[in-house]
Image (cartoon, rainbow, N blue to C red; front, side, top):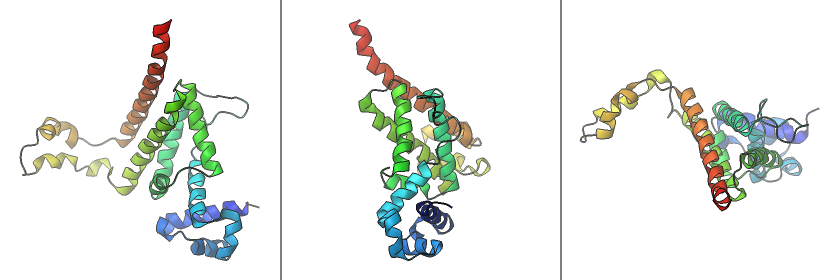
Length: 223
């Protein structure tokens, strides 16, 4: 039988999927699982804790095959492959749950599932040679890129390639737009959002490697 807390969090996610994040309340979740609102508190605590648990529910689903190290190996696949798999899974979650990015951006990751998820990213960054002081910053950068991209898709900013309106921006009458004129061919071409996301992941990998190289630089000069 499913854990009662899991049932409550699943119900909250389902309500957000159906009616939006604003519809999630202790009362609406209680009605969905056949409990009174007060009966939820021993399982999820306050409304804020319920939202934190929803973040954990989402982040805990970011570990497809190859993203998390196998249980019998301390590291597992290379850090680049793990972070790329995590990024793709995060994008998929954002597309599946259009409200997800706004919740992830609104609340720090503090629930057990969230913390375990973040720890896997920390481990990959440390394996890459990123200095400890830079690890939290790069973890936040990864999350911002992944969920920002997913939010742009869910919100319509990154629409289907055939409806890309960007090529029309150079036709405004407010005055010359030299940058748009130089990019006219690019802006009018169909947008390949999958390719762009993969390029973003590759660029994040380069940023991570550059950060690690900077940390190694002084050491090499001393030798």
